[in-house]
Length: 199
Image (cartoon, rainbow, N blue to C red):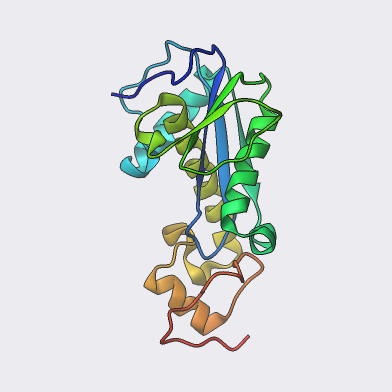
């Protein structure tokens, strides 16, 4: 059973990201402020949900949230500032874009940097504990999946529609065979040690 609030503040935003461990595509973050009485029995950490359930929840969250926002940070930024900083930056940008300024922020994970002096707490596995973080995890995942489906049309040989840019054996084989694209994160180890890539 997810909890609705961590703090005593009325406008508490939950934030989370998706795609941190991928070899290609953006890191995508979402931030959500929900009403205190928001409840949905299907909602959980997006990693625990099927794609069908996530797609079902997405419009419900969007319609019933006080406000929400989503940010994609491209591989060039990830390569420049590293994936941890890019994940935090994406979540910060989401918070800044919310139409209602939150009075408190709860963050999935253990690292964050303050936004506009708004107090925050980092919560390990927060996406399986708090409603707003779970909702943010669903939006981050569904929006990122849509993005990967779009760029799959441009580079179908990597099968991003299926692997979403994660380091599957198939994805790594395609990198070995076809090289890299503008969507690959060049600061990541794109191939396992036994495979070499001539760039």
